[in-house]
Length: 118
Image 1 (cartoon, rainbow, N blue to C red):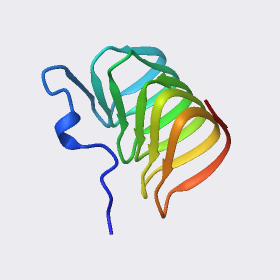
Image 2: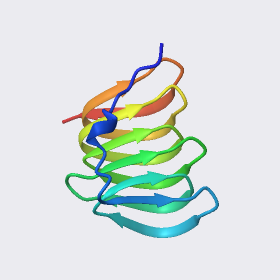
Image 3: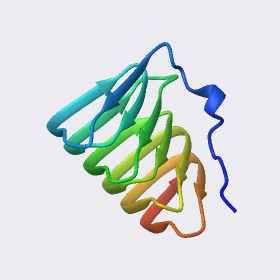
């Protein structure tokens, strides 16, 4: 049974950033809107309050993520700090460390991380 961790009606469609699967970024990506990230980044993703970061299936993040809400369907290797909720879906993989207020790990997810709850 598939669970929806984030209500699709919560997506801020008036301000949505999509980064395609063929994008490769080195450095810092700062996001003030919701983000659907399909690409690769070696560096940092900073989500501002109110934004939701969706790391889509096939995406790769090597580095640091700081945001309010993150949904992981891709692969994250590094450190994640979220003031709200992190969801690792059944397709997601997180290797590293995480600090968050709320954590959901769906069956089938790969989760190899040190966890700190705030």
